[in-house]
Structures are given as structure tokens and as C-alpha cells.
Image: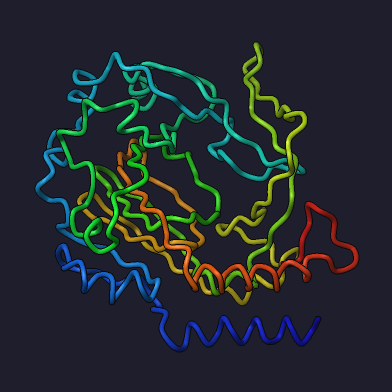
Length: 321
């Protein structure tokens, strides 16, 4: 077991030495599809692209007044939590947000401070909610990113709209998508870790639950019955507990801020944690990853890391690796 752990550590260090950047590079304009595939998608490296969607009317139009007039009466799905952490570990549970249906104007009232409510509110429904719930906004941008669609030879699986309070936080996780994240207003703050740092990222297995606000205004964690346990990352990269998860000290996270008018390319299988400025609006495009040899290798890496979490003294909710 020690030999496996030592080799996994060397494996990650080699990746950082051979091809990974020590910061997230910037591109000054939309790239050619072939260049982008060769330089970023193929090597599985993130970058921030400036002026990639400067022609979108959304950059100038999407003020609270405009959105209130355009889609104020539309009913949207809103994630509500007591602390801003939706889809995150709390104790022995993987807790999902309370999902409410609200008019868009009601959400804006809360974000603008016109109305006070318990909890933290975040429009974050990840089922192509821009196309499904807010199709009136599509003329303010584009249904896909042409050079990315050409590079991958496919259209996006989903186009998502994001709007929330400053306290809304996305806990660390990974996605099987090539992700283009476009900030329309405000800023998003990312902590990124490459797939090759997987040996240092702790996982646990948790009972699923949801938050429910009680009549008293307090939120209760309610377990869901007859559901499979959920594998998730318990570590908070903002304040990592290195006594409980000592391996994380070897991880080499990248930090970047994506400002209005900028686009982050977040490669498939990269671990990420996200914060935002208050009232930040964004749109992202999810393109399904290719399930090729890179995915195959990552699955092998996962399988090598999993036995290490079964070391003596570690429970389902307190893994080592």
C-alpha cells in the first residue's frame, strides 16, 4: 500500500512538472477551433479567454431592471440553503438544497435587498435551465459557442444560467464535461485541481439528504429514504483540515477570478470549488467529454486511490484518500 501511495504521489508531481501550468493562462480572443483543441482540450488544461463573447447583447442588457422587465414573471427553480452550501457534505450527510419555484422578480428582490428572507438563494438549476426555463434570454447571447462546437464536433449538452448571492458556494467536485463558463456581470472565484491530483483529494460516502425550512425559520436536514449513498469530497479548500486529510498538503490548487466579459475553459474531470460576488450573473456551456483513453486512465487512477481509503480506523464518512 505504501508503494502504491508513493507512486501516485510521483505520478501527480510528474504531471505538474511536465505540462501543467502554475497559474491559469489568458487568451486575448476567441481561438481557432483546431488550435484550441490542440493547445487546451487535448492536453486537458484550463485557460481564461478574453473578448470571446464581447458581441453578446447580454453584457450591456442584463441589468436587474432589464431582467425584471424581460423575465420578471417567469417561474424559475431556486436552490435555498441555510449557509450557501448546496450539494455539499454536512456531518454524515450529503445535503442538497431545498428547491423552490419562484418568480424571477422575487429572486431579484432578495438579491437586491428589497425583501429579507431566511437562507441563501441561488439560481443554479443545471438542466439547461436557460433554454428550458428562460428561453426569452437566448437572443441576448448564443445557443452555443461556434468555435468550441467546431473543435469538438458537437453541440453543447446543456446551457445553464446562474444568479445568486455572495454567500452561495459550490463545493469541490468534478464534472464529465468540457465547460465554458461565461461571466456576464460580477466575478466568479475558482479553486481548480487537475485530475492528476486525485490521490490527494479525500472522498467519503454519505447518506443523501435535503434542507427543509421549518415554520420557525430554521432549516432541518431531512434524510431521503431508500437512496444510495453519495460519494463526495468532504474537504473545504478554503480551510483544509490537514490533520484529518494530511494528503491534501501535496495538492497544488490553482486559483483564478473570472471577471465580467471573460470566459473560463474548465476541462473535463478537473476538480473545482466556486465562489462569486453578490448578484453575479453567468452562463455556462456543457459539452459532453469524450470517453476515450484519458477517461480510461482516470478510472484506473480512481480505482488505485479507493483502496487507500479503506485503511484501519477510517469510516465511510472519514476517508483517507
